[in-house]
Length: 241
Image (cartoon, rainbow, N blue to C red; front, side, top):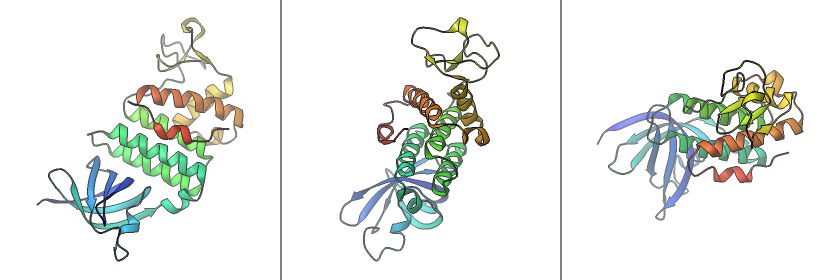
């Protein structure tokens, strides 16, 4: 039976039998993996606590026909405890791992893995407001998946400039000539914040006010739900200002 090793973020787990768990994880080089962790619910288990959501691990698995089997686990980064203690961080992390799972599908994407690890690290360390971290992650994850929004030039005609009308179907901001019914009007600060979150301009993002962040969060949520099949169930639990 082939054995392989990889880095992975634990996305979720559920019980199997009396002592086992099925673990879903996003790995760096093997994409989405579902594996059985035998005996991890016993108090004598050596690595049960390492296979909890939001943990980053170095893991060795046996390849199986339907499910792989966990053989060895070493903790690389224990973000779970810090995230779970903070409700906004926890709900944001839940949306992140759900997004990563849905975008991964059967594909291998080291970029999605690294993006998720970076987002969880930022939440655990409280580098920025959790809503900003989540919105930045969603925009970047969608971009890596091929749905990069356009927040600079007009998404329809290409006219340069800072535009203030967001059109979901067009995939970004549009100029006044391309504005259609149903477009969302944003003020200049909100339009700039969208671009800052996509580009990672935290100097600008961190100094924005709550109303600006709230308007941007609505746009990011709509854009994410539009592109991700069946939407994001966990997004409804995120507290917005």
